Image (cartoon, rainbow, N blue to C red; front, side, top):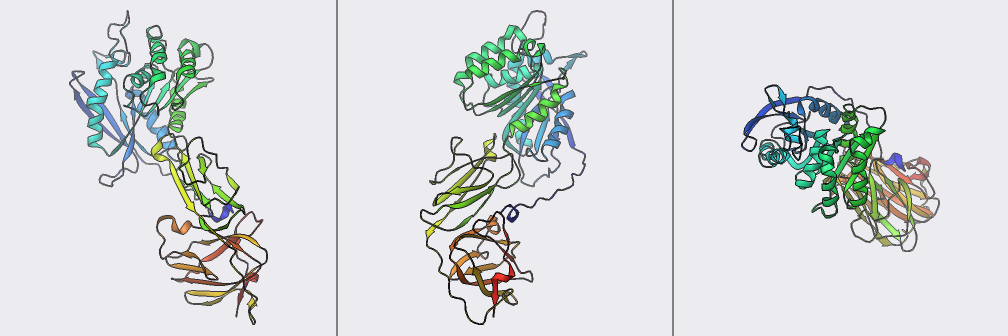
Length: 458
C-alpha cells in the first residue's frame, strides 16, 4: 500500500549567505542604546506574505552564529524557518554588563547584579513590539540562553509566562543567589497561568550536574510541574560548560517543534463505501516524527485518544475517522478526517460476450471496458498522477471526479466492497497522459497497477 502515496525527493541543500541586519534601539528603561542583530531566513522575501516564529538569543555576540547555523540545519527536517533576534551584551568601559541584565537578584561581591527585571521589561515593552512591527512575525517566540542566560530564561518564564512559548537553557546557573530560582520554581510551578510551554534545560554529567543546580531544579520540576508543561532535562557526557550550547540549541530546536514535519499526514482509504459490521484495513503513513492519534466518533482527537500505528490497522466500520498529528507548537498540529458511507456490495454482472482480456478499449480521452474481480471483499482504488479533469466509474458507482477536486483531491483513494464477477469500467480524462489506475486487493499488502489480464475490451 505504501508505494501508492509516498514518493520522496531528496532536494539539494544550497549554501546561501544568511542576511544579517545590524540595528539598534534606544531603551528608555535601560537608559542606553541597545545593539541588536536580526538574522533573516533564507527564503525571506519582503511582501511575500510569509510570517515566521522568532528565536531570541541572549549573549548574542557569541551565541548568535551558533544558533543561526544550527537552526538552518534543523529546519531541513525538524522545524520551520525562524527569524533570529540577537541580543548582544552592553559593554561599559570594556566591562561586559551581562551580570547586570541576566541575574534576578543582587548578590554581595557583584555590584552590578540584579537587573533582570529591567531587562525583561525592555524585551517585553520595547524590543518585541519593535521587532513585531518591523518584521513579519507570527507572535510565537523562543528564548535561548546559556549559563547566566539560562538562569535569566527560567526567571523570565516565571515572571512573564506569556512572553515566550519555548525556552532552550544550556547548563543554566541555577546555583545563583543560593538557589533563589529553585525556591521560586517550587512556588510558581503548581499554579502557572498558562503552562502550555516547552522548556529544555541541560547539564553535564557528574559533579557539574549538581554544582550548577540543574539536578536540584530537575527534581523540583518532577515534583511540581503541571502535566501540560512540555519540559525535559538532558544530561550530556564529555561536554564542557561552553560546548553544551551547541547540543542544547540543536536538541532544543527539535524539542521546541517536536512532532513538526513539512510532510503531509497521509492515510487511505480517504473515502468510499463500507459494509456494516465488516471491518476493513485502514492505512496511515505518517512521518516517523509525527505523534498521531485518532477517533472514530466524529470528535477531534486529544493526547488521550488511541495512537494510530504506522502502516495498517483494522477498523470496525466507523462512519468517520479523524486523525490528528500533534506538535509541541500547537499551530503546527495537523488534523484530517474522512467520512465513509455505509452501503452494500456493488453488484457484478455476468461476463459479457465477445470481450477479450488484455486491456481496455481506448480512444482519445476515454478508456472503457470491464474489470474482472476474482475474489469477494474490499478493494481500494487510486489514480497515479491524474491529469486535471478525470472521472472514473466502476459500474454505476463514481469513484473519482477530479473536475471538482481541489487541494488534496488528487490524493484521494476509494474503498468499495465488490463481489466476484465483472464490472463495467469507464475512465474519462483530458490531455494526452492516460491516468494509471491502481488498486489493493483483499489480503494484499501493496498497491499495484491493475493487471491487463483482468481488464477486458471488445
